[in-house]
Image (tube, rainbow, N blue to C red; front, side, top):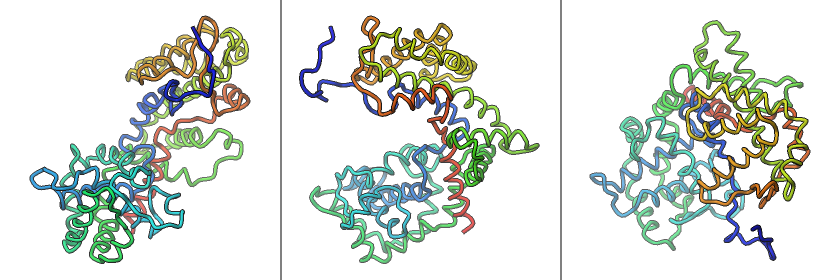
Amino acid sequence: MNLPFFTARDPDLLRADTGRDPLGLLPVWAELGRRLVPIIAGPVTRLDGIKAVLVIHFVHARLFERDGAAEGVSFRRCFRLMEGLLEAYLHENVRHCFGTRRFASGTEFTVRRDDSSTAVNGLYQYYRGTCGRAGLINNGMLSPEPSDVLAAEWDKGADKALRSELLACAKDGRRTLHPRTLLDAEPLLRRSLDNCFESAALNTLLFDRLFGKEHHSALARHCSTLRKEPIAEDHERYGPVRNLVERLSATLATADADAAQPLAGQLEYVRLCEPFLVTVQDSFDYLLRSSATRIGTVAADLAAFSTPIRERAQDFLKLEDVMKNPRSQQLMAVARAANEGVSPFLQEVLAHHSTVAVERGRDPMARLEGSLVLVLTAPDRSTGAILKRLENGFPWDNGYYLSTAGTLYAQAQKACRG
């Protein structure tokens, strides 16, 4: 029985997953993306962020670990305090990674051990995984090679004051770390950070580690080059992701002996995958716009798109023996349903969403009750925007890490050239 809301929706009672990726598409496109860009995560856009993570690991091991045991400061608290310190240090050089609004506020930037803002948590959330995949961190510990590089750049005269301040702030949740004050008072600390962040040896190590094998590195180089080149006016409507994939494919098709050539087939997989993913997303968003409507009526609304839906599903099904993660295989059932018509396809989209929601311990955002579509949360997108992309199949949503690889490659290359 479906009961109405008699008052405003209660978030404690309504557990519909209104967060990101309600269809669980990330592991689907990421499976292909990792074949092209094996190491770098999507939010990792600053080489300084990688360096900062390594410096934080180095500082904690140097100041607070003895025989593998933390002395006085847990790693997480040290990371948060040091992240704030390093973001403030980088901000002075107009190169911080997170906390733009916090720095722009005009007030002094400070940190406490339990702060929750992105300015002191972003690196921990988004950058450590990349460091692990690059072999720079192993089992939560800084690997020997980056440790040796940083040790050669660090002045031991910076240890005492930094250890004292971190220890005091970690023990007392009311105590505030003032990064600018500490940096101004401790020139040896500032010099150590200057040396670490400008280290030629560290730049070389990161360039060698971040981009994978030779063909992955060559593809990242192409991404770096192509992102600077102008896009044909009639192709701008494709959006940045499709344009980049198309131009990468064209580059490899005309190159006789390109190091990235082994990845040409993987790019073709992206071209088979992504149009179907955006079609599933668009169909789901249209369903969210169709509350209290019979599924047959929704299918009739989308009948004009039956051919592109079926064709994109058939392309996606060509990947059935290629994409092996469970979410990709679940989505194959959605693709097979498209061969039976728009209504079975829409029903399977809803069933797929329900599976994802239940796995997350959430209530579905939309479901079928009999033949009626019931919706708890409407999408932000307009009906016109949904229908336009259903027709065209672009712009694509998911980046497959390609743009990020190009951005980071350009920074790493520039750093190595000095």
